[in-house]
Length: 254
View (cartoon, helix red, strand yellow):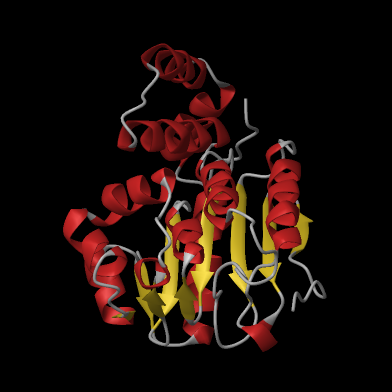
């Protein structure tokens, strides 16, 4: 049975947007409506030029158990998740995901679509696709190989191995591994503050082009235009002055 109560919650506070999964009773599994909600929330964040960092987090013991495949018979969950994860990978802001516990199925790809992944020692990941007869979709396969390499991708997707937190850190799924939830919260806050202290043009431009390079889809002309724009910006002049004056820069985003 579907549970459409407590959908993902979006909060925006200036340059930081936060989306929280709020269904801990069922391991934050995602219903069909949640995928649409997350897509709409991401579109709202993308359209807000003030937002430079987007944080994805979850309540409870598990991060997310993936899509509730029994909720809507005949629905192509892979296509829905692929569209959402692809959109998340191409999000304008820098994306951070805080993983406090188990992460399963398509939710692992949603995390791989984020720029930074932090987790605790309570984390584990498992993708049951092959055991269910589900063929993982193209975007997810590309992200697994691109982020983790073929060997780790095959361990998770073909052999169906469950990776604990240490293995997730070793293969590159987690960028940071923290002891517990309190340490995770502190590390996430510190990272977001560090990102928000950077010049917006340089930060968001490099994020976009790094992802394009990783995917083998670099637009050289767009990169050159963004470099020229940053080089001509008031923020670059401010950054140089602040460095010379040994003070924190006050960036304006132009």
